[in-house]
Length: 371
Image (tube, rainbow, N blue to C red; front, side):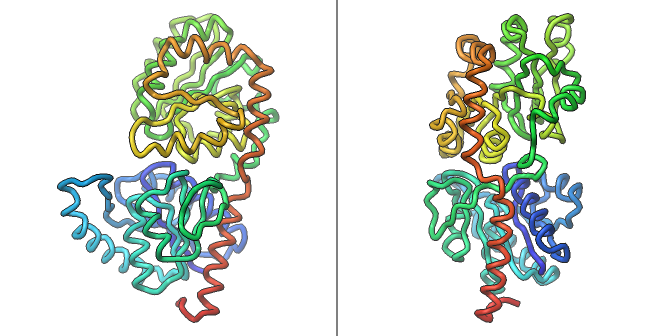
């Protein structure tokens, strides 16, 4: 079986794509997987590193509102579909799987043109424009959250990497602490804004470094591409006290989660799914832009008691001193929050989606519509 997986841009699209690719190969090692992305996305690095071939086509950004960009969309779509058709004719996939984002619209339209079975996976609680279109072209539609409203959808959960879904944080804690230069006996706060970083998080948490240190809390701060945190200044602020470790990027997020007792983060679907799956108490600070999907992504975990939710504009030093520091000083509360989150998330979403992909190919073969 040959599979074309379309998705990219940020880790929110590339991570479930790679998790699904791995699941397909586990189910059948002879499966040939090719990824479809754009030249500027994270996929240009992480897909080849994962060992999968990558084809590139022009991105097709879809404006969220009426603007001059709308008049340019048809031309962009035609060019991207044409290049995607060329990829399909060269790779000859038996099925196309889309994860939303800029590359998915041409993938969906090209799959339709070639009469290939199509599987659509929606990562966010609130569907994007690309997947609303894709869902109209197929009956094989999957969602990451149970309450997502998308035509003909089945709740599978969000595919995450096996090193995360099978993580035993307690068993890995000592190794994780050593990896980052942390003390395994101290309460540890992980701060991460994802692959791109988050300015608000990168400003607020260093601003309460003294209060965190006074509470005996050490910090692992993953700044992302934006940076903005002076690692030397953080280390020099309290040389004999709890560590404040700064990294711009972490490849081993399993170790980051294992080292931590709580996390401050955005609430993209991948982040919400991963921290809930490993039972890590969270303070979610949703991205203030877009259509509000990040707050909706976090809602289920917050309602269950596994996380706190604070608006970006409210997450400043005052909030952190009043709410974050006391939370980190309450191990019993952290334990309750971790337990509340753990059972909400399907850990086998990668295998569920892989099974749907295989079923789509089988159904197309039975109907005589596949290659």
